[in-house]
View (spheres, each protein chain N blue to C red):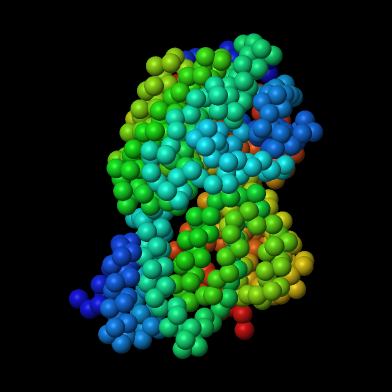
Length: 344
Length: 212
């Protein structure tokens, strides 16, 4: 299949409802990318030069259309004052969530993204992508969603119980996280990100009632602020979000990542034709374990189920142990569904 | 309503203070600790697990119920120990290497304790060698492996391999976590899989009782 568009043009074409030459490929790479260039996850998470080199090499070798700044959940948490410890071959560890022992919000600073080292490192990654690759690729900035960041600050169990024990506190905490998320996103947009991803994984663990009463309003405020900046918004909530889809459909995101536990057809019915779906090949049982032919068959089936406005992706991060041939099978050019195919 | 009925309601609703007060009241009424556990706390947590399985409640509701159960057990455990009553089965549990998430593991540990298992909790990010060492030390009937991240599922497979090869104990291995499926369980040679913390009790009982 011959490319007639650059990666970024291909990506923008789908978001604007047009027909690309083939479907954009936007898998999430972290440890895989670090090790692909002979580095390690610790270096990838702590040095934007490693992160950028790893993602650009993978983009060139596997045919990705978006390069990303995702590394781990603790960029903002570090900015809020949490001590972070890097691991060579796994993600960074937050040694002490700042509000775990004492929930008092007065103690919580408002991080300056340009001064907090781990936040600044991500901003520098965005800038370096633009310096090295210009407009070739879409550049994905990244922030934590309100529930995910609140859970990082309080400890996951504490925060989930806060949602029931003290909803006003949970709301106030998430509002602080949204404010910082907006600050962080604005700096990444200024540095050249055309899309901001929101990771709000913990939201998948709550009831639709709790989600819609407490988390959804905070996500909505965040998405509105991002859209006002003129960037595209990609939402990633790991796990089964089927029960949250009616609420998510009201958020107005441009791209919804769909994990492999969710039916793409059900997601499409919930969010309608205007949202781009990305997913959802099982990252371990299929992408990592293969064989390549099965990966190819799976992503082809995903495209058919999702209909138009679809991008190639696994359900979640590509595992580090994935054979490169399997990622090539996932990302080999795939013809878009015919115009009007709504996947319903 | 009797004290035990009120206690069951308090646990199921996650009202920790009420659960503690009602447990104390039950003990003051000279109700046997084993009766409080077997006739009240275990059925209450079973009901919570069943509601979770049916997606009538989610993780936050499970967590506050588990917290209420823990409050009750803190009053009861010393009495059981003083009477020389020990759990019939032992389990070790942990989240596999590379995965720092512990909610699912904690919930299952609580449910197993509520079902009268002695539970040795190894925590999160547990290397295969630590599982093996704990199994050799405690000689449990059951080992529980948890993973939330799809990316740490390979570590789960590696842990199963290490236990089979090195533990030297005929322990049953049970796995669980958001991305885990029965297919994956079969692929890596674990003995059982539970899709949620509620099912984890039934599956654990079935596995340990299947051993002659």
